[in-house]
Length: 155
Image 1 (spheres, rainbow, N blue to C red):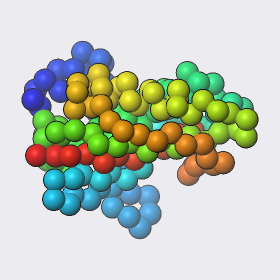
Image 2: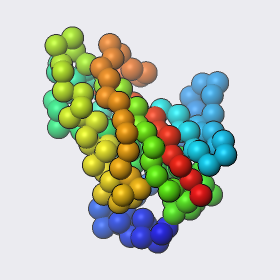
Image 3: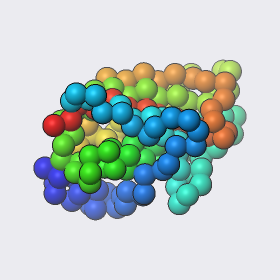
Image 4: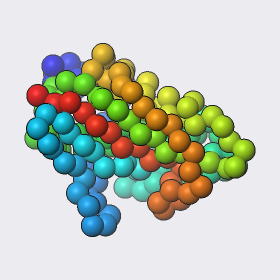
């Protein structure tokens, strides 16, 4: 299974970055029984924020979807670090919580978070299909456009 996931990543042109270290007093993940809880991931790309600002003011839906994709890539990077390099241990993504920095009149958070949902389903197949929330926020850390956390069932 891990080889299939690595093949899909390669086919999609995705190279997982080194998992980011926590920026404050928290851990990047917690494993409890067969659940992996991943802290919120920002749209980091090449060591810096890839997409900043408010959706509906500074960023359009396509840019927000790209931010969500970057968050999903960083979720996979953190999962890989937590699982000692073996993404094949992911049995299912249970839930994503997607936070979208939004102008007051922006109401398409669900479309933004589709960027992450689609990427994870493309990489993990059925194991990547999940429950989720897509919520508008006044602001996110470091002016990030999107932040996403995840809960996974693991073997």
